[in-house]
Length: 615
Image 1 (cartoon, one colour):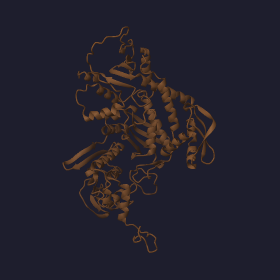
Image 2 (cartoon, rainbow, N blue to C red; image 1 turned 120 degrees about the horizontal axis):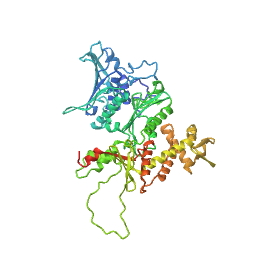
Image 3 (cartoon, rainbow, N blue to C red; image 1 turned 180 degrees about the vertical axis):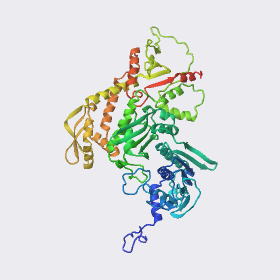
Image 4 (cartoon, helix red, strand yellow; image 1 turned 90 degrees about the vertical axis):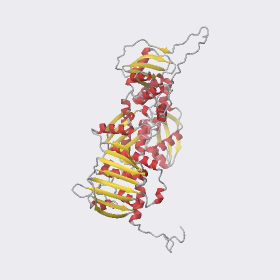
């Protein structure tokens, strides 16, 4: 500030002024309306709160020039329209209880904020009343006036941020803003599968429908299954397990994908609380923890989950965009997510994603035709999930002299025929190829099993079951390791001491900010106590809970399983191969190894016939 700043009085102190309503609304708009997609979110949520069954969203230039949301909800009367443009005026709550919030909106800030930074027109008609329209431009209200509308509400926002042109400089390209709008509508459509949505882009060549979703009939899971199939594709729903579990007043419902249907990013993680799309560290961390021993660190699970809880047990008023929540019992919410997903994945048994088989079929195809870009993208996406198959170049090799006394080893080890019931999911073993791949015959195809990866998972699950039965053995330290921390960090570690003790790590206070490590998990061997505690502190700060010690124990078990399993290159007898297949069929998570890679691939007869041009 300079001496000539008008905000400074002659006495050298700043002057306190009351901001006018227009400035207040523009400031509020900076929190509520971050970008065009934020405006779409607020308007669509208002339509859902109004009981709309069909919602149409039109936009132009990524939402910067035009956003129009049309719904068939209850509408507003001419007397309601001026109130709708007043700050903190809402029909959602009466202000007496801010914890029992059962609607998307409740602050009454969206419409006046939009009117403060753009040209806003609302046309609405309530049953038994005439239609009316009202306009708000830069905070100046005109109307209401008579209008023509059969039912519902039409909210049209033009020239977003025209009143605050500096905000336009921070907008991304039209394409990026349009993609953000598309993502917002997708998330809200997942939350409300019984509501129809239409997303249309108004361009120079006329309107173009980007997304059209009709209302889905049926119960919650049937409607959600069809809605997810339309939005995420049939591959997701074909490779997902149903999540439906209740505990301690929490209900988790939705779909979680198999580990072998993992993604390279977290883009297909959709989390909701009471139908509200959120991005919450607690829930994201719980989802990651549920998959931690079936996925490698560079892969991400796909899921669409809705956590339903009494509104009084969750606070949604902790973020201006309402994208975060705070639970009264966060540990209960986290525990339910982890146990529900793990239970569902374990119930899937030996099941693996269908994309693995599709990738294998694609890899078998001759490479005579040039690969299209879309095929290249799919190939890269499935490269992690499917074993790499090489198409042999079937050329007659030149005859070569064989050294005396050397015989040619057979390429295929064929077991004796085994009378195996044809309805066994993994069929009957028929051959072992290159001492690593078990080929089994099923009722309608063949199964190829990676013997090392499959047995690794079986041994790992046995070790985990043994540890669960007998507990985690602890090794008492002759001399406790003293770790000096700051008093807040020491308090945080000690608050989690009971959970750490269950994982085999015993921590006790040692005065001031120091703690003493007296016992460590025996299976870990020598432990860097100070480094381990600091890693646990980082996890506690990030997620509110730590499973790092147990994760390290599971990592040791995984390494033990790897070294103790059937190695590649070992010839197996027919009875051994069939015993492996039968055990896979009854073992949880046997469809993928400890790193998330598939343990088996199925090729249907019709796929094989297509490879040979017979279909």
